[in-house]
Length: 253
Image 1 (cartoon, rainbow, N blue to C red):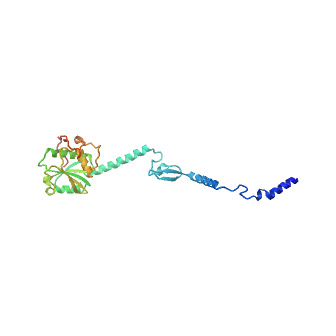
Image 2 (cartoon, rainbow, N blue to C red; image 1 turned 45 degrees about the vertical axis):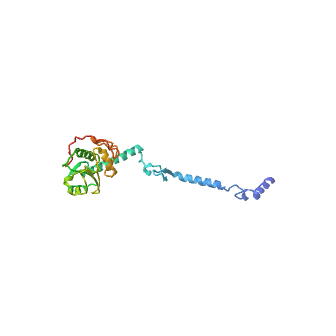
Image 3 (tube, helix red, strand yellow; image 1 turned 120 degrees about the vertical axis):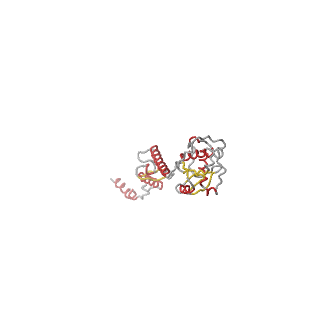
């Protein structure tokens, strides 16, 4: 009994009740505090998710992962389906643009009556290419150029193609020398901006298209075929004879 009282007296004087938090080991070290804070942050971040966008940016997203929130395929849509949908939209856009050009008269090789009609036509078309040559002095080169222009008009709806008889355009004759052969008038924004001269039998329709593409008069593409006059001719390689053409001069009036 005396021992128990002495023992209780010991605890009463020196026991835990009188210990400081440090003596009772109730304090937390800095390392433990940082670990606890990290755990709390991880728990708080559990409600969101990180996602990398197409631009390479990393975003912290809330809620369930959702590809549509990143501009990707919609719910239940895989990459192939998204590409197919985009392709269809592109085809619809191109078809609508082609229809617009067709309604303006593009896609056909036109004959222009005189300078007045030339000016009228140019006002309606952003890009136009006009063959300027004399019909009274028709030559095989002139007929070949007509064949090339017909091929170009069918392949490039984005531009207007026509022919103007130099004998019916005295004003333009004072500005352009046509004695050296056919000349292409390059027109943009409703006015003549340049010309392509020096065309001879070595040029194919593709070679002319290449030159016009450099001038921004059409959208040149190596994969486009130009019928009988197709070839790989450009300015640098146009040194072989172009194929003979027996097509009649059947462009649209």
